[in-house]
Amino acid sequence: MNLDGIISGVLNSGPGKAVAAALGFPEATPLRRGEAMPANPLVVSAVGGASTLVADALRTLDLDAEAAVVDVPEARSTDENGRERPPAYPGRIGAIVVDATAAARVDDLEQVRAVLRPAVRAVEPSGRVIIVAGDPATASDVEGAAVRQALDGIMRSVGKELRGGATSNLVQVADGSTADELAQVLRFLLSGRSAYVDGQPLVLADGATGPRPEPRIVVVTGAARGIGAAIARRFAADGATVVALDVPIAGEALAGVANEIRGTALQLDITVPDAGDRIAQHVVERYGPDARIGAIVHCAGILRDKMLANLDEKRWGAVLQVNLAAQLRINDVLLRPGRPGGLADGSRIIGVASTSGWAGNKGQTNYAASKAGVMGMVRALSAQLADRGIVVNGVAPGFIETDMTASIPVIDREIFRRSSSLLQGGRPADVAETIVFLADPGTPLNGQVLRVCGQLIVGR
Image (tube, rainbow, N blue to C red; front, side):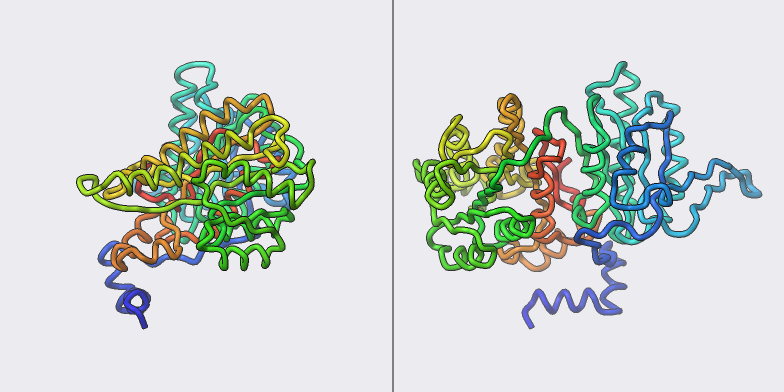
């Protein structure tokens, strides 16, 4: 057994668990993954007034909404010492959705506390806490904006208090959001597909949904292994035709992935000047002169970690070229209107950033710069392409268990695993599920970078 297996075995033994807990490493709970929705009742509360938007969205979900809704207990009682005794929910609950779209005054936040206080202990393992609110940027007055932002703080703190793999997230609706759009986001957050999305605000955007380009051709860079391979497999399972792209040295692994998913393989160094032209040419040659790309996922990336004092120009430039500059050049080519084999109007662009791009990381100045740059690209490009219906989003993975992270010293890996609210590392499939969600034409998010990190303590 290798050192990783020995340490994991010790930590997961009876005495090891006790020692790990004493050291601040409580036991992680296996997460509910896949399409499954919560098995137990969905509890819905309206704060500041009921919302037809939330009620209508819940009715469209693939569950018996009427039977799932349980009224929140309103009766307050005190114990013999005059302290408030919180109401108890009827047994364990799979999820609680708090409708705070009408919350506009500081006093409304008391209702949120009263609703969530008993829920924190009642939510079952891998349960969900979801707050639906308005966007602070569109509030009608200062107090309303403050209250909406306060809900963000509540959501993040609740996520750190939940246990058993339960998550907490916030959905901020736009003025023009529809019940179908909200339902699309709630379905993702309630299902096991969002297992490693925790402590995150999802901001709905106007005009971000539309028809799906057909045929549905998806280009995934860095697809030979790890997260990229998981993304390619998940898109194929969703019915897409996948162009799996990676460097020639990874050609054998790339061919294996492409054959497995019945896609096509393109061996290509994305840093070459004509990379965008060669991607478009591949699409035309394989799928016809009228074929267009429905989505591209920029997953290819490298690490060249060194403390800045020891970081030379070669290591610096290699990371910036692969992780950022190549994406910009490829986008410029594929976004040319009418380009054969290019990106279709209504398509999706998804960049893979990192939590290091938010918070920085010791020894990763070049990597953090490149991933923060991806976030900047997402926000700027989404605004530029709105008139073509092209939507641009990003994901920022935290500690995901891959061959790349396997090179990290074992003790450091265990610390990283336990540094999230979910007390464990994520899987490549967690990132893939989130990317497929963002690439869906029915998902009303645009210009957003969604963290897939289990609410890692690093960054915002």
